[in-house]
Amino acid sequence: MPNPKRRHSKARTGSRRAHDALTARSLSECPNCHERKLPHRACPKCGYYKGREVLEVKEAS
Amino acid sequence: MRHKVAGWKLGRTTSHRRSLLRNLATSLIIEERIETTVPKAKALRPQVEKMITLGKRGDLSARRQASAYLMTREAVNKLFDTVGPRFGDREGGYLRIVRAGWQKGDGAEKAFIELLGSEKLQEEKRQKRAETRAKRAAETKKAMEEAEAQQQAAIEPPEGGEKKE
Image (tube, rainbow over all chains, first blue to last red; front, top):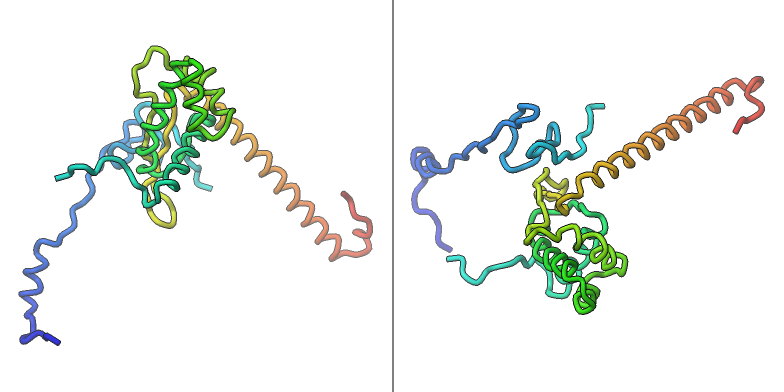
């Protein structure tokens, strides 16, 4: 079986991972409750989308 | 290149997929709004729009074509009596898909798909659900109180000899 000939340095590992960063999701503001929400989706906090489009949102119990 | 990959297979065989879409279409026409995953909603949209176009045509041939696809007579009747005429002045685009949250378990994105103009019906349905919920909550509360009272009675035997219903 083929095996690594030499140990990888930390720098090599680090520089390989230089491009692996995650990007934050871009969020938009809900026009109804001003929470940050994902764009093009109903607001999970208040259930609104485009003026009405209400989903039932459970009140904290 | 994204050539020749139109449509959705949904990880199902042809017959499984056809059944799924027919069931979803039937439910959507009867209920006016259903909740499902985003890919299923997207796959469903063209099917239901075709059905509604049949509903607008309204002749016997159209009715037979719709009956061949939809699962229940009830859905066909509703399609031709109320849904079709409702969209008389609209050239397609009868449905609305709104993304709403994620499914527990596999994290699939959920959406609801609804017929345009069903807002009032949805409001009524929501009202009804709230009422049932309140009723059920009241019943549970009552049952719990009764159970508690019986337990109390069991602890104090001299007073709790007779059980009330």
